[in-house]
Each structure stands twice: as C-alpha cells, then as structure tokens.
Image 1 (cartoon, protein in one colour):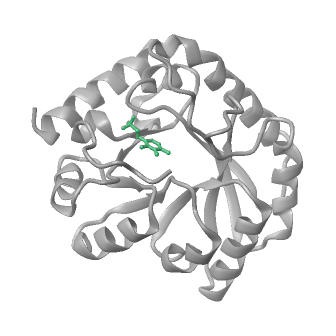
Image 2: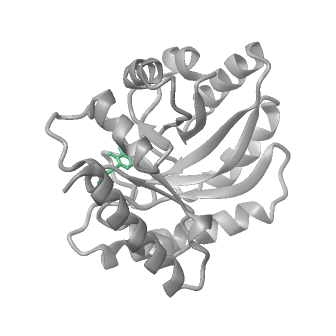
Image 3: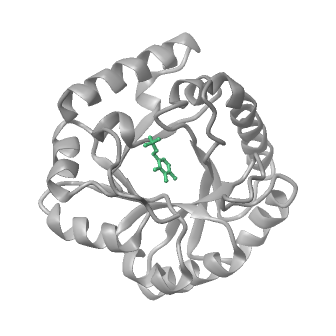
Amino acid sequence: MSIKENIDEILKRKNEAALRCGRSPEDITIIAVSKTVDGSRAREAVMGGLENLGENRVQEIMNKYDELQDLQVKWHMIGHLQKNKVKYIIDKVELIHSVESIELAAEINKRASQHNIISNILIELNIGEEESKFGINEISVYDFVSSMEQFENIKVMGLMTVAPYCENPEDVRWVFKKMKDIFDKISSMNLKNTQMKYLSMGMTNDFEIAIEEGSNIVRIGTAVFGKRIYKEDK
Ligand SMILES: *Cc1c(COP(=O)(O)O)cnc(C)c1O
C-alpha cells in the first residue's frame, strides 16, 4: 500500500474510534512519526494530509526541516532530548513532547527566552515505570508540573506517554485511563504557565484504545510508513 492509502486507512480508523466514544474526529491530531524515514517519504505523508511530523532525533529534524521547508510542516520532538541540543530546535518545533527533567525544562526556558518565544511542552510520564523508558512517575508529576511555574518562557500544554508494548492493546488500556485521570487532576490545579490541552498517547499498535480513553494526539509511524528498517537510537 502507498503512504497515501495507509493514511486514508488510519483516518478511517481514527474516525471510527472517535465516534465510538462520542468524540469529534477533528479534535484528534495524528502525528506521522517520520524517524528513520527519508525526506521524500516524509513529504508524501504531508502531501497525503498529515502536516504534523514527529521525530526523536535532533539531527533528523534539522535535516528534514531544511528539505521540507517549502511545506507547512509542524514539527514535534517526541524523543529523548539532550540539553546541549535544545538550541538547535527551539525555534523549529511546534511542541516538545518529552520533557522529563527540571534541568531540561530550564534549558528550554533559557533558549526560548533568548528567541523571545514561549516554548510549548508536554511532560512525559512513565506509567508502567519501565526501566528502559524515560519519563516521570505518577507520584512525582504534580510537584514537577508545579515547579514549571518558575519558567516564564515555557507553557505546559499537557502530557505524553509511551505505553508498554503489549501484543493485545487492551492490556494497556489502564495506562491510558490513568493518564487521563492525571491530566484532569493537573487541569484542576490551575497552575501558572500551564494550560492542559493535549494528551499525547497512542501509537500504531494501540492508538484506537488511546483515543477511546481520551487521547487527542496520536503518534503513528509504522502504520503510515511501514516497518522501520534501521535501528533507532533510544
Ligand atoms: C517511534 C515512536 C512512535 C511511533 O511508533 P509506531 O509504533 O511505529 O507507530 C511514537 N512515539 C514515540 C515516542 C516513538 O519513539
């Protein structure tokens, strides 16, 4: 199947999942995860209707940012971000999904302030508390988001998680439920610099379940571009 056909299939599944739980399909954004995919195929996804592209490496954003400059791409940083690389992407990305330390937030704040912009971020949670994953645990997240009040050039727009991989996506439904619960609790805290709007969860294997539980940003790679050939950095 072509990338365009893949996208049409995903849109159909997204619409059905939204309607199943009484939500409006337009309220759910699909990010095409173009990591390891070359610029010309990323371009096909944008032309096919997915203007939001997600990457997990700074270098890849920079390369494709230049290559696709003629398109209206909205870039998303979804992978682990090293402090010393923040400066390269701060003015290029729409949303940083993967903030999970005060030090990283401080660096984003500093660079955003130098550019005179407000940087939109999500806080990454590790709900399964898997050793192999980045993210803040459920207990620490309330203090963490409160501490974001000190950063004037950051706006916390919501939460992100990568659910543990399970053959049967029903087995991770609880993770998405828990995320929605934390999301609602933080919303009711009415913090400065925080405007809870996005719940970024759901990937190729589990995005319909994530939508049913309240996700409004799903990050989809394999179902758009096919299986990734190259090994990715974690
Ligand atoms: C790779 C990746 C995705 C997409 O995964 P697929 O299973 O290929 O859809 C989503 N989110 C993050 C953070 C990723 O690294």
